[in-house]
Length: 219
Ligand SMILES: [Zn+2]
Image 1: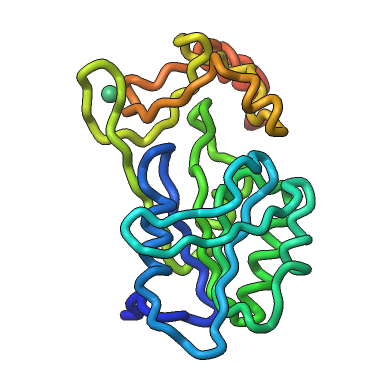
Image 2: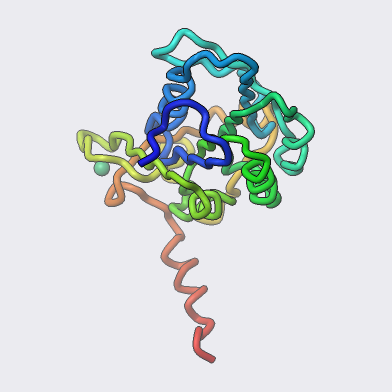
């Protein structure tokens, strides 16, 4: 079996799970373990949803990686940011890239780049997030991580991300993504917690799904 040491050309590895599950840390550990390779280069990219912190620091390693921001609605810009020296590419918060990220990742794999992707598998509603299901399906390796449920005294493994607005669970019909630093910074009443399934609350979800079922599938 191929172990994850060094750079593996054309290999896609996905690190996923809810918020606070350590997926970025695991991705960085993977990068930190790389032996020094002459002429090998690494680039870290993120969608421009939240540009407040332009570096990614690994907690256990001693490395700090600069981040290149890519317009979230034009992931093809990734291909412009990459040069032939880049043998390994890290895409962080990949769930925020619009459609097209699938093509970009497949193109990179065909160019024999080793692609590392991290992102949320599920949105706050508990539904598959953006292009993550596609990327997980075409990946050579998927690492799924759990967090610890933050609901009062629970501490069970958490697979869901709970969005809270003024301390209350956000409703199903609230927008999925808030774009732009101002809105993110403005949303001081909003917070996120890792939750296990029984403690993941999405008011309005049952109604929305019931409505969807009104359309018969077999007719
Ligand atoms: Zn719980």
